[in-house]
Structures are given as structure tokens and as C-alpha cells.
Figure 1 (cartoon, rainbow, N blue to C red):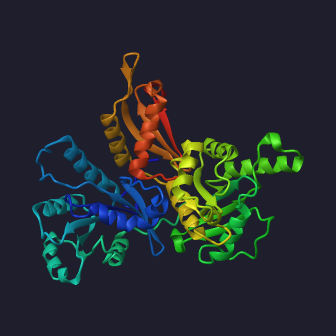
Figure 2: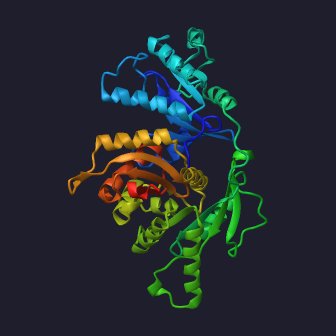
Figure 3: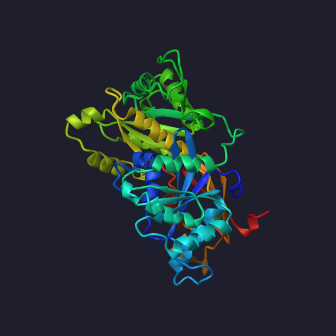
Length: 452
């Protein structure tokens, strides 16, 4: 996979000087996706890239650090230099930029500096005059027209002017590529017997008329069920795969059950995203851990659906307590988003589809080569690998070579110098910067001997 081409990429970079509200605007634009994934975890991630969905339009949004260096001036510290480099790299991947300014402060020298940078990169630009919290600021934003780009008043804090900003941004983006892969993503629903897999699927098909395709009916014999999220060329098509309950092989007594287990395992192999359904009343079990291990082994995108949550709540179970029990029972699932739902009363059924759609975007995420290398080089500089046999692992270059799952190839001096703990650290850094919620990440290390 080569570096993304700005002429066709549907990518938008948010740029500006420090403290103008870039991150607040970023969070406002991508909130639908991030809030669904993280609302129960209580952990805010410092993301660089996330997908924005607005009125059936999709594009990638890049958050950047504040520009605080006058043109050609030497950065005063490593952090400042890194943030400026981040902005430069982001603009190589994004054909459209949102120049964020503070309308309460007026035009500042660094606002002009960022505008010059955008002209140098020849990018389409919209100025977001942030912190316009009430109509009294509307007359003052005309001052920012001297920057030479269209100016729109917005308030990331109060959600004012966001639709108008998105409408302007979408007009500047290149059209979606019609020749893209139209193969539907396969979503397998798996779990132990009687956790509510079929009830979940039946509830989903019966209630979500906007999301689900017109299907003549749903029966227990249905194995593959098509549905779509969104409309038009940017809609994502899915194939929902129902599976039989998975039990330990030692407890299987007849041939029918054995074939059902084989079919469920086959469905996991075929799937791009797997929804693992757990019973909220019983809590996580050893078999749940085995199923999760199989999904992880097959390198599939993953969503954890905690069913029967209405009953668990009546019994006094809290999300914090269940989340802690799940973390203790299956500690390697910390990358997968969790949905607490009820197939019985419909609680969070639609939210589960939003989460599946989010994870689907993550398993298909492509990262620009320049941005990828900046993040990994910074990771190496921040925490150096341990010395082995008087040698230390060195990174020369990185590039993404595939999706479903996300595969990153690292060209290094000697792959055997990479400890498992250090590779886990690099994957954690990639998740912190690019999201990758529920998406497996594979690092492929190549040494000098492997280059040809």
C-alpha cells in the first residue's frame, strides 16, 4: 500500500495555533463514533485520525497540534518541532483543511502564519471561527476574512454552526471513489448457547428499518442476512452471519453439535467483524475466554455485546463491576468496544450497529505513510528498545500493507531484536494515535536481508 494521494483522499486536517479549540472541534465532528466506543470506559484517547459521518457522507479527520513557530524560525524544543512536523505531514495527506481560529481574540500573527502554510501546501481551506458562543460574535468574524479563505462562525462547545461547517467541507472534498471494493463486510454473531444471539439478530432485523435492507423474513434457518448502513456510494454493506452456540468440544455429544461448532468456527474465519455475545447475568466464563481467544487468533475485528443487561440492572449489577470482571477474566480484550444491550426490550440495539459500523471502519482504516512514520519514529524516540547482544532495534521505514486486519510493515535493522513487549508498546501507540477500536493490528518486521 502506498502513501495516500491527496488528490483523491477524503481527508480533512484541523490546523491552527495553540488553544483555539482544535481538539474540541475535532471531538465535536467525530463525536458520534468516539462517544459510542468510549462512553463507558472513562478513558479519553489522544487521537490523530477518526472517521466523520454526516448526512451519508464519510471522510477521515486528522487532529493536529498547535502551530507556534514563525516561518523559518528554529523550534525552541523537541515537542514544538514534533508538533509542527505533525501539521506538515498531515497536510500531505489531506486535500482540505479547517483553519481554526479564536473569534474572541481576533486575528493573531500565528493565524496568519498557519494561513501561509496552507497556501504553501495549496490546500482547500475553510476558516472555523471558534468560540462564537452567541450571535454577538457574528459581526466580529469578518476580521478573519483577511486570511483569504471563507469564514464560518462555530462553537465547538455549544454545537453552533457545525452543520454549516460540515456542509462547506464536504463540498470541497473529492467525490467518493465508485471503483472501491463493493464486497460486503461479513459480521458473525457468536457466543455460548442461550446468550441471546438469535434474539439479538431478530430484534435487530425487526426494529432497525432504516439500517436493515428489505428482507422477506427472519427464521432460525437464516445463516447470512444482508444489511447496509448509510445510503448512496458511501453506504457500507454487510452480511450478517448467524451461528450456533459454541460449547467446549469435550461436552459435545453428537455429530450435529460437532458440525454446528465447526460451522461457527468457519464463520469466524470468514468474518471481517465478530460480535461476541455474552450473558450479563451469568457473567464472563472460561468458555467466553476461549471464544475470544479464537477470534483474536483469527485476527478479526471485534465487538463485545453484553446481552440481558436489563435483567442484570434489576439485580444491581453495574457497568463498572461487569467491566472489571470482564477485564479480569479476558484481559486481552481491552482493545474491543463494549455494548451493554438487551435483545428483549431493544436497549442499545441500534447503538450496537453503530459500534459494528465503527469497528468496520477501523479494520479498513488506511494511514498515510508520512503520518505513520512520524508516529512510530516518535515512539522509538520516546521509549528506546532494550539492547540485545550489544545491538538495539532500529526503525528505518514503515508502511501499511493491508487491511482486514490492519497490517503494518516495519523495515528494521534486525527483526529478532524486537521483544514482544516492545511490539505491544508500538501497537498501543498506534491505537492511541489512530483509534483502531476493535481492530487487530499486525506488525510485520523486515530486516535488511528480507528487503529483496
